[in-house]
Length: 124
Ligand code: SF4
Image (cartoon, rainbow, N blue to C red; front, side, top):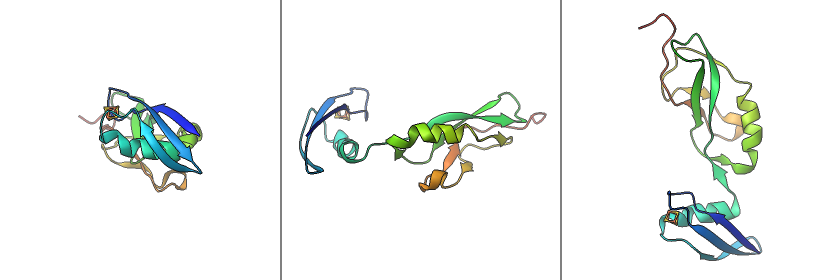
């Protein structure tokens, strides 16, 4: 079986082809550099992605949504379900950048963390 996809490690976006046999990775072609190889090997077997989104925040000074991200990669196939779960979450200011918003998100051992510091309304 042959899998084709685009390396997303850098903006070049190399088109990559991977020959698979019995679930094992065979020949890889299309990579312009060694940096993309780890990504390609992961992508061919079990693709993962970081999750970036926003959630509502109450009591914040200037904003009503907080940017958050996963602290590590999640399986790509679960990103849609993950976004549904994130839609149920709401936080209250103040929040600091790096604060854990959800620990062990969906049991995958990855935390959801704040990407921004937000003060409470009425605090300068
Ligand atoms: S193979 Fe290398 S040059 Fe090509 S997209 Fe991946 S990291 Fe960038």
